[in-house]
Length: 247
Length: 273
Image (tube, rainbow over all chains, first blue to last red; front, side):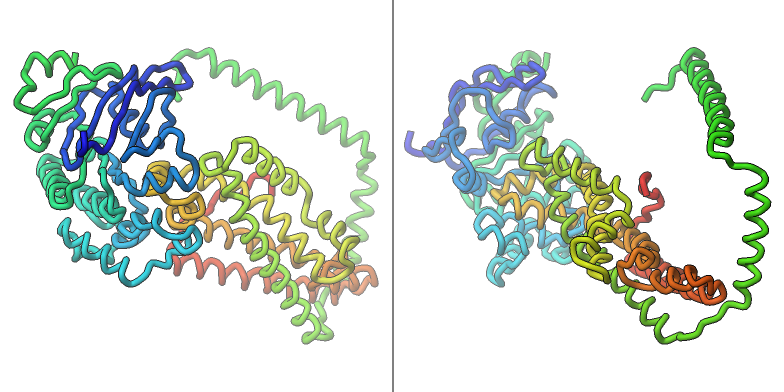
């Protein structure tokens, strides 16, 4: 498989309280595909994507990102992997008191020296690039407003822009529209889909809205109790399977 | 917390309160007798106090320039001490907060250090630093700096611990280094609370700086000590008035700063000050 980008085998995660969140997950992702991961709350979707960039430490298994062993990576090596994997969160997780464009610039931190990035000494090119990305998600007007002055949907688009600033191979999104109204949800998903398609970025999106998953994905993965119970095209996802995933 | 509808916990609390009241009463009477706090002394004290008061008025300020110079030295000691304390506390608090500390043991160590430093009063620190660096404002500055660290590390770390952990997670996910996470993610989020606490600490330090001179650590307190010992109570009152004006002036300025910056209020006074 020449266009494979992420290969996950036998991934397990047991939390310290004994909860088994992932029970041996095997999944391969191809370059440029838009994958939705669906399943009820507590199925392990969130743990799964957090294991991929090691925000959560996996208990066992193997993760190969562009042939690099993610689980064995330490320090700078791990940060170099993380900078190639953008991440979008349910709660946007922006620095609310900082300007919108500053939040986008945070996507560049992984490419800068620790001191220079820490002091926020972004070069002119980088800042122009960040404004360009804001333009792509329709927020160029908001670039110099404080992040908390934006609406929920707009903040999530800043989240997309921050991930894009990482120049990523993969963007992972953890329930990106769970706290948004239907119209903003639609807009956010459209922008996410658009930028990923344009730049050939692989998208892994945790969703619990099945209709959104069907409308936007090339491929849907169903998770139930830490195991993959469905993996296929949206058209193959029938009512019985949905019922099985959610019950 | 779920409020219990049962009467039992309230009742138990009442017993505790009553028991505590009785205990305090006994302790009061016991101490009163044991410390030989008699009416005689109180009456004598009033007499002597009256004598002192009569000697205090009218207040006298003999050398205004020298006093103002000493007052300014006190303010300088407070400002420099606070600033040093803030700088060290900024660094230490990142290691003290559980969510940013490289290791939980380090967090306990730094918090333990801050607690220890906080437990020792500023005047005792001043006396110790006088032994170390000699009489003068340097000892005062160091005393206030270290005493500030004790409090500021605690309140800074608590602010960091209370902040939205999602922001930290998001920045780590971009591949940012720990230093970058602190500078770009945590600092902007807690900055206004930090400034607010620091200004509050400056208020406290001004008050301390005014009396540090009593033990020889620089500033206007030395004048107060000198006149009191020489029984020049009118001049001592003059110094006290200068101290009062100085403290009020600085307080007005810090209130103004807080208003201008639209900062959150630190209404809760640190419990151990």
